[in-house]
Amino acid sequence: MLFGLILYIAQGGLQGHMLELQRVTYPGPAGHPPGVFVSLRSVLGALSARPLDPVAIIALGLVLLLATPVLGVATAVPGFLRDGDRRYAGIALLVLSMLLVSLFLAGGAG
Image (tube, rainbow, N blue to C red):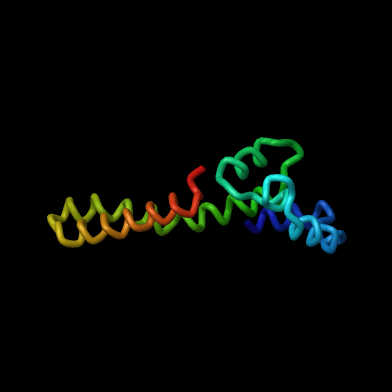
């Protein structure tokens, strides 16, 4: 995220911040503001474009930050099972299922 912020500043992103604010706050034809990432697919698509979009790098950092708890709980389940602690493995599976359901209900998987 820091790399994206530095790249954004280096490209002069802070100079036209009022124009950026107007561009982000007015919805486009798809119902959301243009240039705003609303799915993982749009973030990955922006990362594959050249020149590299610094906002896409920041968005990728946010996605990774949000994925950290899910991955932590997912890796805890095998650890609990290996130690023979079925109760905590079951609790971790319940928490993991709640995290995944909330992700899919929010539309973040597409």
